[in-house]
Length: 497
Image (cartoon, rainbow, N blue to C red; front, side, top):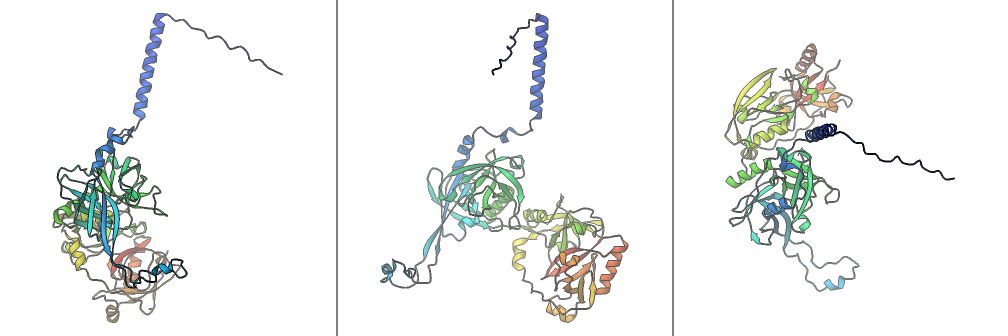
C-alpha cells in the first residue's frame, strides 16, 4: 500500500517596505559583526609565529643548511680468537681450514649522528655519545660538501660536545629559549637530522612534556612526539621561529625505533655548556659544597616554620664554600641568588649555572627563623676531583634500646673505627621492625642516627627526649638525620600515639 506525501507548501516571497528592509539589514550586519567578534575573542591568544603553518616547507628550507650529518670513526681491537673459525658442523668449514690462526687485526668502527652549526666560523653542536672516543670526525652538509672536524670539548654530564670545522660564512642557527612561549607543551616543533643513516630528514610533532629527567644530574629534557631515531642524536629540535630549543638525545622504545617518545636536552642547558666549552674547552660549574635532599610531605610537620613542601634540606656541610659561609646541616635552603628554590633538582641547576667565584646570597630556614648568608661559589669539577671514596659501613651486633621500631646502640670508639666515623657521635641502627614506619621509610641496620628533631643525639636517652619534645609540641613526626655509607639524609618518622 502506497502513501502519498502531502504537497510541500510553495515558497513565498515576503515583501517589505524599504525602511523595514533597511532596518533588518542593519540589524543583521550588527549581529554578524558581534558573532565574528565573539569568535575572535574565544580563540586562544597566541603569537603569530607559533600558529600552525599551512606548510613547514619555508621553515625547513631556512634552517636545513645549518644541519649536518656526522660520521665518527674509531679504531677498535680485533677479536682475541682465530679469525677463521666457522661454527661446528657449518657447510663453510672447509673454506677456513687453511687460514692462519691468530688474533684479528684492529678494525675501524663507524658511528653516525647529527649536529648543527651555531656560528659562521664553524662551531658545531652534537651529542657527546656521537663522537666519544673517535679518532676521526667528518661533517657532511646538506649540499653534500664534506669537511673534517676537530673536537673542542665535551660535557658527558649533559651529553653535549662542541666541534669545529675550518670554514667561514657558514649558514648557522641560534638557540631559542627552552622556557619561552615557543616551547610550551602543545607547541609545534621540528626534528631535523640523519635518522638511521638515511641522510637529511625532517619530522614534525609537538612538545609533549617539559622538564623530564632521565639519569643525569643536570637533566632538563623536552619530550616530543616528533619522530627521533638512531642517527638523530645531536640534531636540533626547532620551534616555529626556527630557533633551536633542544638537542635530540634519547628515545624511549621497546625495540629501538621511534614510538613517539623522544627527548631533547633543553637549549637553556645546552647554550650554557656550549659557551663554557667554547671559552675554556671544558665546563666550569659553580659548587656550593653541601649535600642536600628533597623535602617530603612527612617532613614538613617536623620542621618549624616550613609550612609546605619547598626548598632543599642540607644534610651535610663538608669543607667548602657553604661551610665557610656558616651554613649547617638541617638548614633548608629557601632562595639562591634571589630565586625561590622549589626542590633539590632546581637548586643543583641554579648552582651549576652560576659562575665560579661569584658571591651569591642564600636564604635558609634554621630553627624556625630565616637566616641570610653569602656564599662564594667554588668549582664543582675541582671539588669532585678532590673527593675521596667513603669506606662502606657494616652492621654491628644488636643492642638493647628499642625506639620507634628501631634497635639502636651508642657509637663507641671501636664502632667509630669500624665505620670510619671519626669524631661522630650518635646511634647505630642494628635492626628494624619490618612493620614499622622506619622500615617503610627505608631505614636499615648499619644506618647511623646523628640528629633527632634537628638536635644532636649521642645516646638513646637523647633520642627519647627529642621524641617527648616533639609530642609535647603536638608534632606527628620526628625528623632524623641518617648517615649511610657516609651520605646523610633526613627522614621523618611517624610518632607513636
